[in-house]
Amino acid sequence: MASPVKEDLWSMLEKLLEKERGSSATEAERFPARFLGGEKVLLFEKRGKPFSFEPGDVVGVAEGGLVEPLGVVLDATSETLIVENVYRKRLQQLREVELADAELTLGYDLQLDLLKQVRGGKAEIVAVFNEKPVELFEGAPQKPLGRVDARTVKVSLVKRSAGGGEAREEVRLDESQSRVVNAALELEEGEVLLVVGPPGTGKTTTIAGIAEKLAERGERVLISSHTNRAVDNAVGKLPIDFTVRVGRPEKVLREIEPYLLSYKVKSALGERYADLQERINELLETIRIHRGYLRGKDRSTFSLLERSLREHERELRELLEERRKLIEEVQSEVLGGARVVGSTLIKSQLYPLRDYPFDTVIIDEASQVSVTLALLAMVKGRKWIVVGDHKQLLPIFRSEVAREELEDLGAFTRLMRFYGEKGGYPRTLWLRKSYRSHPDIVGFAARYVYEGKIKPAAKPKEKTLALSPGYPDFLEPRKPFTLIHVDSQEERRGGSRINEAEARVCYELVDALTKHGVPQEEIGVITPYRAQRSRIKEYLQGFNVEVNTVDAFQGREKDVVIFSLTATREDSLAFAADANRLNVAITRARKKLLFVANANVMEHGILKEIREWAKKKKAIYDWRLKKWT
Image 1 (tube, rainbow, N blue to C red):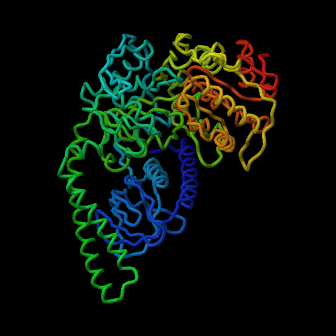
Image 2 (cartoon, one colour):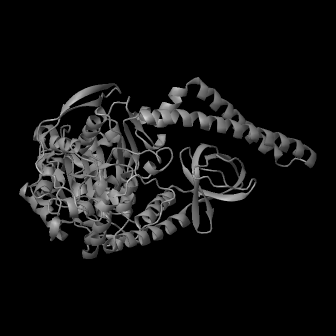
Image 3 (cartoon, helix red, strand yellow):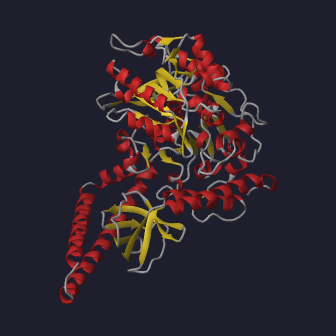
């Protein structure tokens, strides 16, 4: 229960979540439908535009400006929808309803429900196994970490070959990674460990190493994050025999599919499941054909066809219930035998994970997670390892929130206040060697962002871009950190910005890179602004190059990253030149960073430091003059 002095935090979160829930519900697309029956498995038919749901979607009933979550889609066609009634809603048969995607709404509902318990009430849909994590965000005393064993740790992780093969590989962790694993293994019930993982320092390997060691000694471990990719990266390094991934097939990496709970359940059921599914598919097709015949028939024919249709629908509901029970039984066996489970933070509180507690909860990319989102997973555990980087992007809300408030509402930054190196109860360790990028790239971040707390570990030769002969000067591989000066001005596009000259330069850079041997899939183009992203995409039609905003690119990396600053005016630079955002932009590149900007506006803060770093490396290229300056 929250203490009175901490009420401001929980009140602020509650107001913000309620506001954002309302806006998300009004934006959800509605699908008119008729409820045909069922209790645990619900059957709907379309009454207007075709359904566009996929198996695994969370759907709800839309009423006015609200979307009330109903359950999870089991099967879907454009005309028929089968939903597992996870939230045990009662609907009147043949009732006309409007269905909508409810996943975003449900995420807010889970957090608001959790806040009920935090503030002295009782959560209704969130399973709270432990209220101790709430106290951590209020600064509850913890025993300082003290001296940590630096003994080298070796872990046995899965390595995949280019051909898709898998093998266990013994990995020798570096000193800082070993310290983190050793500290994690010494955690006692009720204790938290914070891990600062700057770009390229091997946090995924470290997380997998912790999970493997804990699983070996019989613990149940949850690996969670707000992104599927972060969960997949860690899960994919662990043995498949004791690891399960809970999520939707289309949202996980292809190589992770064999880890999926649904994949393991279907494999265990074999032909029994296949035969049942075949009969269900046949009935769905028969029902679709019957509905087609019903249109335009006279009353006598209509009556006969309708009776036949209702009989097929009754049989379908019975088969769906049989399948549900079958899956539920095997699902429980698979989850019960798993030592490590991976899921997103929201999925950790949804069926089938809702009622499963864990010994240790590991949260990755916690810097982008709000306090309440992190708590969804943390209340399921007895010990907590929270991994993040307060120098990268902070949580993103739809509403405008001041930076100071973001730091207060963010899970990692708030925990750092109490348990960081300068907090009252220091329980933080750093990963200190960065292996991702060329030393000239990560060297900038090490000096100006991380104040010398990390250092480059890669050899320059290993991270130098290979180009075919005759490449233009501006691609010089010996200048991995390059500032491309473009004398340009931004333009407003609604609430966003574009810079036409920079967009054109991005196209010419991509064109030159691909002509000189850089694979298109190893090039990324990023910018702070959505409008500029769209403009660059227009230029790059026909190229298989990823173009996105910086915020959407966190956690990703490419051999070559082209960054378009876009902004040239002082008011715009406050957003574009945010130190955390620029740190993310710079550290996505492994071998070459092409920082495209009007160097004349880089007069203050981190922008000035970037310009001075490039100047020191003799790596400022004037695009108009076509020469190094």
